[in-house]
Length: 368
Image (tube, rainbow, N blue to C red):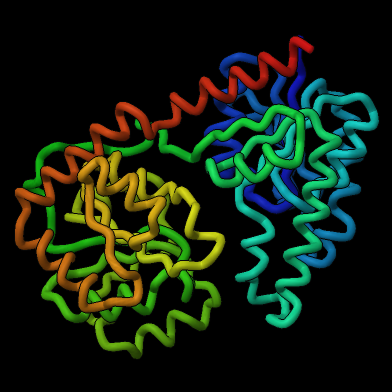
């Protein structure tokens, strides 16, 4: 019997990629699936997965310095056959497990070196140096592991250049069972939506300014970072057209998607965003509503090829407002785009296709 253990000291225990998708998929095939987390909420067994809590760190520094050791100690106690970790902070932990003769997978959710270039907590003058150092470190350590899983084709290509181990791209496509699709548009409001983190670089200023230039409403769901950003936005022209909903669970997200005519993804052209595959894009498509997104080349290839939305300059609030108004005033076009997006998700951009890739990798590694 193959015993599996996933590890994270950064992500929440019910993280969509780690728990909802990967661990729950593996629990369909394997009898002993474990997950190590660090949130202070205690141990539990849920959906056939054993969750082990190593405590909650008191801030980022303590997490980085002390919790990889805690996770390693628990991992050794579990004595799994395959270890699958999800944080760059655990790269040294993964190498230590590999030295013990264990099969170890690194799951790279984001392009770490490019992501560091946008980290506000790292002084700006140090970011390029830290980015280069992190890339060298990451490349060196993954060579000692059994496999790498990536969340985008871009990250996959990067790691294929530095390791001879298997590198498998597993995209964060939605599970169709999680997204409500209703082909009827009778309950649609004169509104668009955004669901996700509310940051400067994710276009919160541009979304509010654009919605203020229309007669439509913006359903805004998520958490502001920093928290003070909400007070700044409330004083901006356009906020009067915003219905701020805060953080929502899946049921309430589905209700918002069903009331909306389109979904927004107005991210800035940051290095870590240009080649990303935001799950919210595919959730909008799965819900049957068109996407209004930044005109990144990678995104345009998906949206324009499938005729499921429009791509705009993320800094051009007039263009964003124009497309919001056009789709809200032309529901036939919006509905057609939404139907195209739903079809594309059903055929390609869904978790079942990625689940099979995950199974294939685990079968290959467990047969060694």
